[in-house]
Image (cartoon, rainbow, N blue to C red):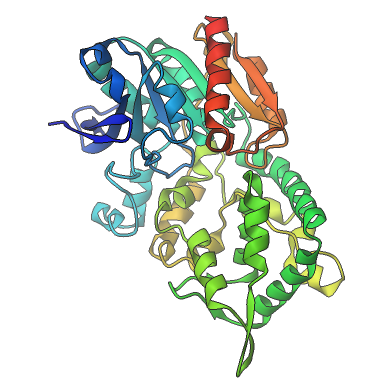
Length: 436
């Protein structure tokens, strides 16, 4: 049963689907998917059937689709000539959520890890193919993939190109054959550059960050939600530096870190409240659980890659930085074993995460031969010096996909589809039309 309702300028329709947990076992266990169809109000009559579909695959992993109100961000441009499907990828949003509350229904850590092994890009693509015929009557559709959604789109081109009329990718061209170690060895120098740029913009933050890091190394700080704020966890706030306004947000956060109390200086309630919202994985635990698994493609375990590789970059050690007079460096988009010790939303899942990190039976996610013979019109926005996705890796992949057209820009950071949505989408749609 579908339900339709209205927001300003749009008509929304809820869709639910049942798909196999394991698409290689279609008669086995099933899970539910949720998606929201969006059509412009002036196109919501009988003519909607003639509108081509555009499916949005959210970044992450582990985030549900955007909950737009009306024609926000890129959606307004898309609705000019498409009806849009905002899909909650498996395990996110309203699609059979996977978290500390639900995963114990699977059994112990081993059963949970086996279950979560089905929550990568290849399964998401096969979900799309399972629901496409019922929505389009069998016609191919266009996919817009942001960040991890772009990784999924490249898997789509590899596994089921027949389902695609076009593919649009924003900040999400993955390395086709890199191990997680390669990804993080490329990432830490990029993060260091972003931190240097932040300190050049806000030099007063150097001393503020040193003071906060020193406080955390000498005090046991537990945030109101139970999150244990260590120096390493504080450093991970550098994830903000990969977004267009992130450096400014980080600066404003740091400037009210301390207050005077009868017991001496303490981290302010306002600072703690904002930090716990930024660091908690309660709303998107899959991000932490399968973050490194999205790079697994062979018999090599990911083995907590970001943590191991960080050891190759001693400049990120807060204690060593404080022993000298240099700045404390932030880190970025990475998940570590201690993440599961700090975050109460993840603590019950630590053993599950360890098992996923040790897993050695990952399937290939990309097919270089099929990509080299690609016939689907594809366009990708590549953000110069993107903190989240290595530009060199992205351009190597762009060259490996036949016919892919790139728009390389330094006008936006990784969240360009949010910050400059209509222009970004319009540029990619034009490139795809030219290619078609």
